[in-house]
Image (cartoon, rainbow, N blue to C red):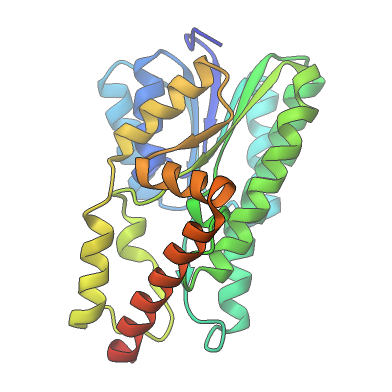
Length: 282
């Protein structure tokens, strides 16, 4: 897919961060946009920006992708008026971190419901129609570095994101005969609202120790616009796996080719985070 003009494109998480940047970029490339997010105000702001830049948003709606009935209703509305999507982008997500000894069931459930069931709901209701209509297309699943690596305190988040990695790996080959490409995006640190809204269970985020960890994270962030540009290039070049920063790409190489060094990095991260937690517990 080299040309996005008039291609029907569904994007979740379009109210902010990577989702907003992706929607604006695709609007500039003259795609026909269908946008969702749970944040009504942010979604409307994105739509306004796109229209001011001459882009087309055929439909948008605020709802929770964790709610299958709401996703199904939106899919039915879209399909009845516009037919199947050609590009489907699962970008929406939330994040909760914490030690397994203090995490509660609600933390695990929230991650699985939004970050795994949410994309599944989208794929089930939209991708099926694309296949049925014989559309050539592309699926983009935004997972996380946490779906590939043993990052400290990321158990619930990693559970959901690793699940999305597994699904994408299967669909990468399953959908080839349907002429549907698959791109799996595994961002590291990105300068999005998620950085501020991530829930760290049991930790006082205002403490100096927590602030220091946050600063180390912020120093390595890339912009959402940079990520959007990488995704567009991946679709054009039929690239499957996308890392958004060099550090994550290097860590992936360490994990596969130099396992002892990968284990050393993970253990150093664990010690750093544990030290911060011990001084910043609520």
